[in-house]
Image 1 (cartoon, helix red, strand yellow):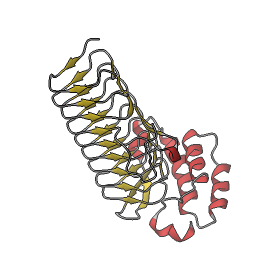
Image 2 (image 1 turned 45 degrees about the horizontal axis):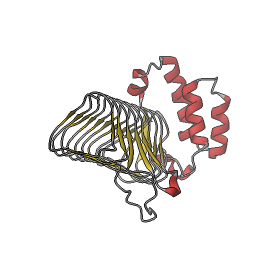
Image 3 (image 1 turned 135 degrees about the vertical axis):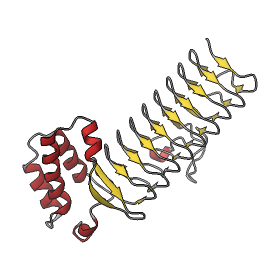
Length: 268
């Protein structure tokens, strides 16, 4: 094993470290922790619990990963935190393990940017290429799909979903699911404000796909029919388009309500 460990770091003899792991001053790594090749702990990082961290992550000072969740129902069960590869975890980020009542796992995927003071609570699932800006907070049991962006000082209520490539504006209080590909802003109980067109273009969406998706969006979120009728109408014009089908499926499976445009809140 070829790793660079500062002499002030405290590393359990039972911890598993990959090749070329760099552990800086005053870090603590407990016994049930494994860290993959090429991962860097800058300084004062504390990793505890049953935590598995993949390759080539960068973890900045005072991050706390794997300590017991802030859930009164937690009673010491050996739940886990699993973090993938290539993530940047900035200063004072906290990531808590799962609980028996929530599946025993908190999961963070690959190539995410978790800015300073972000919090990922117990039993959350964060996909790939997600950006959480400073002080963004996830309550328990939140699912964040790939490519989503959560603005600074935003708070996501427990048991909610943030869809793929959705964008949540800063200082938002999210209390209902945010559909994929959509923009959301407006402080507490924010509203949809259209599609994340720039994000979709970056993912390769064509002009015809965007035009089609805008029409599906209009039917789902701006029509005055019942939600069931709107979903039926949208399915009829999906035309096997992957973006449209994903937006429709997400809308149809919402269990905690949907964030919608402000002027249409009385219809859903």
